[in-house]
Amino acid sequence: MILKLKYPLGKFKKPDVINHEIIENWIYEIELFPSRIWDLVYGLSERELKWRYRPGGWTIQQLVHHCADSHMNSFIWFKLSMTEDTPSIKPYFEDK
Image (spheres, rainbow, N blue to C red):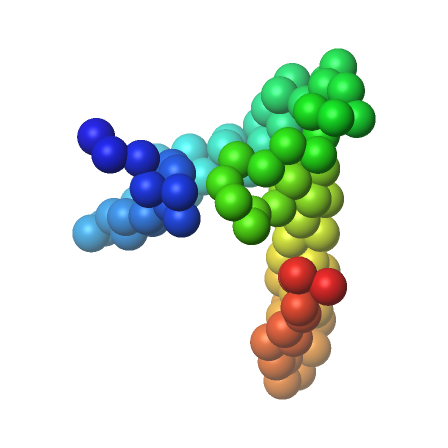
């Protein structure tokens, strides 16, 4: 397999059928995500947190913060969509 820097984990492949088991697995993955990130970055030095896995890419520190921002925004958007009469998608500029 050739590692492509743009998609180091590969592109998302949508299942043909999304069933209860797949949804439960996704929920489990989201639940584990914070502890998995912690396990990966705990104990890294300032220098290591500033490492970029590809030229021009974000640092480990920026990626961790982006993941936290993204998950918090997702939660807030979901909550708003459940409480507003006509919810709209509220974009943000993650690179700022």
